[in-house]
Structures are given as C-alpha cells and as structure tokens.
Length: 285
Length: 265
Image (tube, rainbow over all chains, first blue to last red; front, side, top):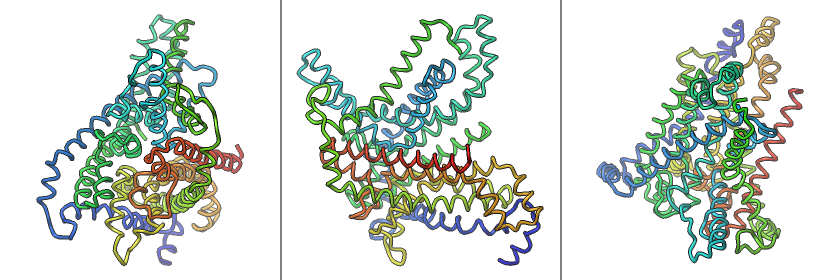
C-alpha cells in the first residue's frame, strides 16, 4: 500500500495506485452482482434447494408467463413510439417556434424525471377512471347511463401513462441536439422558400436522429422495467414481467418461479441496455 | 424561428398547449385538486377541504416521511461516496479496464428494480449475511438502484474538468491526498451536489425494490401511498403524493441553491 503510494507520487494528474478501484467494485459485487448470480442459480433450484430444471422449462412455456412477456413487449414498444412522436413534436416547437415562457415549460417537463412514476397513474384515475372527470363530464353532457370512456384499465391506460412519464427522457437529448442546429441554415432555407415541413425533414431531423435513437432505446429499457405504473393501475388483464415477479415472490412465495421470470426479464433488459450503449456511443457521448 | 405566418404560429401553439396540457399539466393539477377535494360527484369537486392532509398527518404520514428521508439520505450518501470514489479511481486504470469497469458500474441502472429486490431477498435472508427484515436491506436496495446515476454524474463532471488545475497543483508539489482534497473535490462540488440531489429524488420515489424488501415499521412514502390507494382511499393517497412531491421539490431546489452559492454563479 505505502509502496504503491510512494511509487505513484511523481505521476501527474493521478491518484496513488490503481488498487483504489477495489473498494467500490467489491461493494457493488457484494450488493448487486452476487444477488444477481443467486437469482440465476435459484432459477434452476426448487424452493427446498434441489436441482429442478423441469420447472424452468415449464415456466417458459406457461401461458401466464408468455402473456406477461407479450404484454411487456407490446406496452414497451407502443409507449416508446408514443414518446418519440410526442417528444419530437414538443421538442420542435420548444426549440424552433419558441414563445414567452417556453423555457420554464421545458424545465417543468424536465422535473417529471425526478417525480415518482405512479403519480401519473393516480392522476389518470381521477381524470379517466369510471368516476373520473372526463366520464362524469360526458355522462352529464349527453345524459349517458354508463361511463363511455374505458381505456384506463387496459394496456392503453398503461401506455398513455408511460408516454407522459418517459417523454422527458426523449426531450432532454433532443433539445440538446436541436441547440446545435445552425439557425442560419434554417433561415436561409426559409428565405429561399422552403416550407417548414421540408426544413424539418431535410435540415432538422438528420441532426436529431442520433438523439432519437439513444432516447428511444433508453425508453424501451425503462418501459420494460416499469413497475409502479402497472401496479397502481392494478388491472387484472395487464400483467407485465416485473409485476409477475412481484406477485409470484411476495404474494405466492414461489421463489423459483419468481427467479425464472426475473432471469428472463434481466436478460431482456441487459440486451436493451447494450442497444442503448451502442446508440449513445454513436452519439459521441 | 421556423414558422413565420401568424395563423401557423397560433395553430402550432394550440397543438403544444393541448399536448402539454393533457399529458403534463392535467395530471399535476388533478392530483393537487383531488388532495383538496371534499365532495366530488360531478366534473369538479363541490367543496374543498384540508381533511385529507390532516388525516394522513395524523395517520402514519410522519413515519413514512421519516422513513423516506432517512433511507434517501443514507442511500444517496453511500452512493455519492462510492460513485465518486469509483469515478476518481477509474481515471488511473488502463483504457480497456476503465471502459469495462465503467460499464459494470452502469449495469444496476439497467436491471429492473423488482429483480434487484428479489436478488437481495435471495442473497441476504440467511446468516451470516442476514439483512432481510431489517431497515438496512431497504437502504441497500436504494443504494444499488441509484449508484449508477451518481457514478454517471460524477464521471461526466470529471470528464469536463480541466486537467490544468491538478497538474499545476502537482507541479507545485502537492501530494495526491492534498490535491484531491483541496483541488479536485472542490472543483467537482457542483457535480457532486447535483448527483446527490438526483439520487435523493430517485430514492424518494422508489417503489419496485422497496415493496419487495421493506420490513414492517419502515414503510416509505411510495409504499404508503400504494397501500392507501389499494384500500380505495385515493384522496388520502393524493394528499400523501403531494407531500412526496413537495418534499422532493424542496430538496432539489435547496440543493440547487446551495450549489449556486458554492460556485458563485
């Protein structure tokens, strides 16, 4: 230890010795990678600790698992597409057709990143629930006997909530990319008679593609892992992988089944994480 | 400026107002409104009341606020130390090792929070490492989930730091420990504060791992809000959500102010 300190003292701009990386790595290994490895191990052991590979295979073929997997992928892809569209529209307006107060609004949207995700679901209950504002308004206005709007407790309720929660993750890199677009180029195109759509397509969008790919793959990852929104909507038909892990482990104490599903979920997430890193790397981040 | 015609600009602003209003403003406004709602049978509540706030304050809100703040502080402080430590120590590794380990420190942010909780239950439910049923397991779960964000923030700050200051300090004979304490860390301070604020906010809203591991008697705000709404008490849930949002915003604004004063900008 003291030797390493002495040896590296003349080095410029360096901390003494490369062994300093050991303590934080060891901490992460113990608290994160070791539990992760145990999940993988437990997926092939039954709850009394005996090897049971048949259970692993049967869960992968079980209908509840396949349904949850399909739900997770559908919700994630739909929500990401929604985030990309909404983020692009909001971003274009905030960056290129600004109005008084648009800076404050951009910051307000940004603070959504720090707020808990289930807040939006709870708000949606009041807005679009069967006794919510939209339904009571429509029932009063058209004297309907039944609440007419009924999307909240379906896949689409989850998708809309996730669009609200994850659009800021698209908007942030997008606004950064837009701020680098040369305004002179836009004005020149516009003076030469190019219509706004053409300017967006030929000048602005090419500059935004890396940000959209990076933000989009981050959205895919976060929506696959989303738990609070799905739990708070609590619809019987909308079960995703994280919700299934929770209900198997906590409500049914079926730890092997929970670990099998968690293993699949983790592999899926790590794949998406790789995709995000690749995209962010191309962005030059 | 992309759109020059007046009618075009009005149309664009209408689209923006609609999207922003429906997706962002309405949820926040309606949570606030419902936390104050008395009777609510029509489109709008017929009366306003502070009853839901006084109910949750008399109930277990105090304990939940305390559990959330203590957990958030402990987890963020640990994540800050370990994240800054890792980011600083990574600078002296070889390029390959630096990239590999850097990736490793980011991986916790990619794993679903419920699985992080499940892993902790599987790993730490037996002696000698018995954490299940203690307050510590909640803090560990939060630490794991936010560690990647603190590490990322501090690394980004380090990358933007000009190496000149450290080199000058070095050439003037400053020892590594002295240089770290009096040059590098003060320059990093704004990034450290921002990292701490973000991780504290993330911890305050954490639900997935917490519902897996929390012991009785240590119910954080999100778990408490979930059990209220799950019982059908959605107005009290809204009031407690407002308390959570207020606590988070006060914390973030306070940290921002401290940072600004520290950097003198």
